[in-house]
Image (cartoon, rainbow, N blue to C red):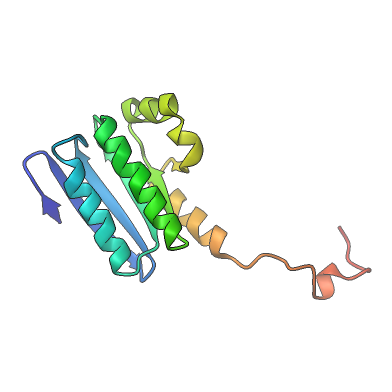
Length: 138
């Protein structure tokens, strides 16, 4: 766990490609850089999919939004994803007002976000195989 007086960040590595990052405290100009470094560090270590647990974040300003945007772009560059979880009502309102809640998946809980990552990783039906044949029942 990394902590300053204003912000603490605890990382739980779920598997080599997935981490849940629990954030506690305000995300603003003073704390945003530290959070960005923590998220970038996870990507350096091969974790393409990040779940940000924001339940204990009572306030976020434009610097915090910038951290989310940068992290979202960084995860996309490595074919991963950034998912927000357990977002407080105040922060969710900010995400809604800025349109970020449309471009970044927001989940009710970290567990729901992890389920979505797992579901997105499942192979899609390719249209081949016996279930896709002419006798398939739809």
